[in-house]
Length: 160
Image 1 (cartoon, rainbow, N blue to C red):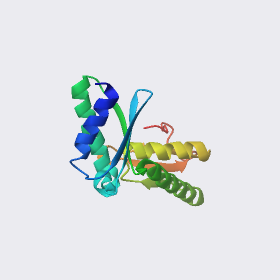
Image 2: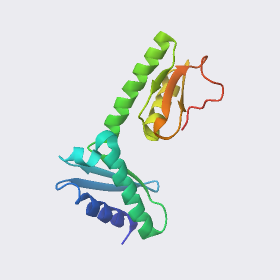
Image 3: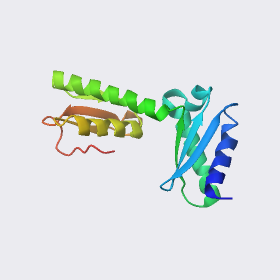
Image 4: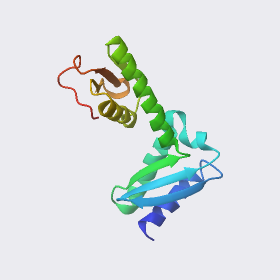
């Protein structure tokens, strides 16, 4: 059985334990598997702030690692959640950027995953030449900071 079929079979086996009706599409792209799931039960699969879909992806990665004895890169998208999440994060980034420009003071954003911080870093870098973004803190206390370049600490980078 080829890798694509194994990924599809394992995804379906796990998916059936969480939702009853769904459509599934698995495509390999540049060594990574894009898994697109459509379901009326999306909230059960996405979870609060995407926690469940991230856990689903991690569990599936571990299962596939055990079968293939090598890491398998996956990206799971449920009902276009990733696109909607990116739109929401870009809107949030623009709001924080405008507040920072208007107040000339740094804005702090908490409770973001590294993936979410990265999306905001990318938007700030590409659309706001006078602003910078960087992360401070560790673990659950990590925050993203949107600040004027002139006010930012000298050792910041825009990447996670």
